[in-house]
Length: 511
Image (tube, rainbow, N blue to C red; front, side, top):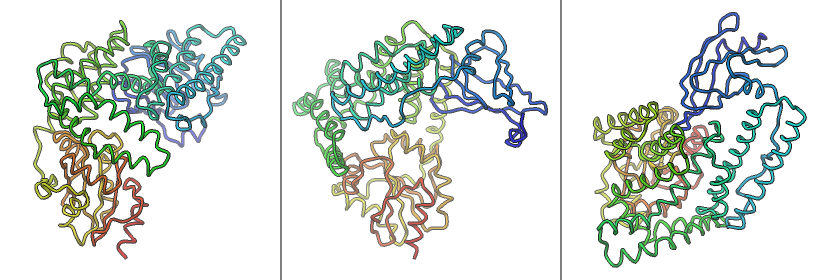
């Protein structure tokens, strides 16, 4: 090992995505004076891991020995059945997919989706043709390696195609059928690309079978009665929602997009449906889970381990990561009876107990403000002025977020660092939550300790929150605003996650 490698630190590490959460995990071990080490780590399924010096495929229950020759920049794997690892380390194959290709350059329409699909399909076909030529030139390549490379390319194709959901909320049926029938394959090796493919594919499919209007109609079949007005809105909702979403996706300018976002927030029909969904949340939640699990079972086939992985990913993503609360009794019973994979069941119950402890030990901290002081107010500007009234003379850093928003929670997880970075400024941190259930709202705040004498949290009724967001022209989350000591909203782009840039704005306000 050359000296610069020793200087980098006498340790060896591997990284891979947690199969249930898709969050990266890292495992370290010390390297002795002769360059030797041993590292043991937990694994559920065949997985691609990034090691120091190389990436490779590993399987549960296996032991791998390897030698790194720094002089010749080669690696040799030893042990049972390691031909695939040695082929992966030895063959030099390069993908031709251009980094410049981006779904955002295609039109948000069926024609745009199919044009994007054609481009991706052509590039993958070209890559596979080049690989076929390479394999013919190297006749000792094993069929297992050929399968491994080919499936990785198919997983990448599926991942790239599913990215178009950021352009269209509903993809053409021909497009979805191709991904389902030609690319979805439970025999892929788990890795960062396939993890993303799994998540986006299953989320898209479960979202389609959990149509809000269909859920409310199902409640009617179970005996729930609605008023004539509610029935009319439930029937009209799919078309209303599709029209608004299409307008947002096809907006040519930010101003046009903001216009339709505000239209969505102020729509009375949308508000009626959302209120009904909130009223019957528990029954609808159970129906959604039943639909999702039926879908997962249908696409995972007879592979019980992979089926349990997908079920666990869905429960974690929806019930834990998004909602940030303990599992409801129906899900607990389902996990106990239906999840067979011990590590999956153990993981879910650990997460459940974590949030259950937060809920049971909840302290009604003064940071949680009642909305009584703005009761019956409807004007967004007046509501906000009333909320910030007590803090005149101080700078207010406003954070509009939601418990359903991943980037919002990622930002809140660094709150202590944020508070430390701005400790020299006389600031009140004001957090306004968008569409956040009370239990999840308090759990997130307590989990990340977003508390302090100068920290204030509001969880306003949906119509009041929407009114404030329309006034502030908010169309993405999290969104930040700075309010000066006189109560003026500063007309500057603020990103509280960028400490140095925010400090420069705060310094100007101090002068």
